[in-house]
Image 1 (spheres, rainbow, N blue to C red):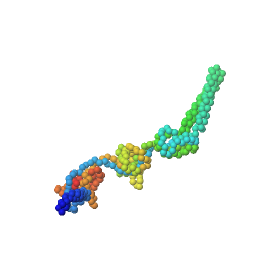
Image 2: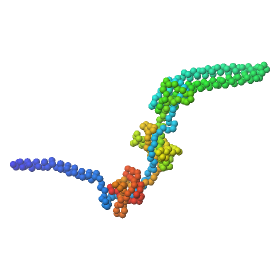
Image 3: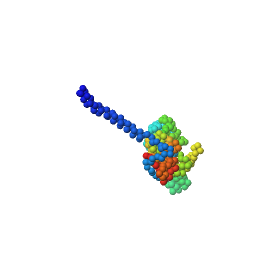
Image 4: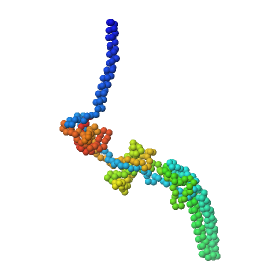
Length: 368
């Protein structure tokens, strides 16, 4: 019996040691819940008529903020960025080396036209040069004989002068034949069509085996778009256009990549207005300062044009509160806090612009 009681008392401390951590864990859990509730439970607005308790009082700060104009526009090709490559001579297209989307370098062969008719024309012109050279030699020999006979009094002067004019005529015919050779050589060179600029082939309008006729106008073979030859075209309302100047910085995004902020610079403003639904707008052209590969012509862009700076009154964002009546701050009036409605503008990381309802010398309360 004594041994049993003794054993019971010996086991009691061990039992208490096993139960104590459970009570301790429960107490710690309740304390953590109370602290979390205190931190995360929404701050209750002071009851009507009650003054809030301010942690500190601050004065508004004047900041230099950018003055901007926001508008929409498009990414477009620069003037002259799209080159149409045509043919100067007529003939059958025997070779076409490009397709839509092909990348070409300046001087690369785009197509070839059958050169045989042009080679025949060149040989004919060269033969005419040889014939006119012979005729010129004969005319000069006859003129020399006539001059000798004239000095001996054997022929009249008119006949000697006719022989001299025959030499001039033969010389002119030879010059004409030589010019025909040059023209034929030029046309033969045009049978090989080369890319005038580097870029991407945007369209192909002629196929291999087709016959092109260049009698009145040069038929277009391909259209080449030069790389990174893009610019920004935005429409600015007439109420804001007076503040926009060439050289103003522009930031913009496109609908495809709204999180990529790109930079540009205003280069010119169109003198004529564009009227859309009765609203007068002016086209503002901006040069791109960076051209990523995803940027393409005709993409829709959202522009922000920085036209200068302005002085703004700002307060800590924690000082601005809001309820059903709108935004307000607490002003220091003696030993009391007075509610003051305000209108807000831009926001920063930890500040808010006050556009009306607050003077620069006011003292504003911050509750936390």
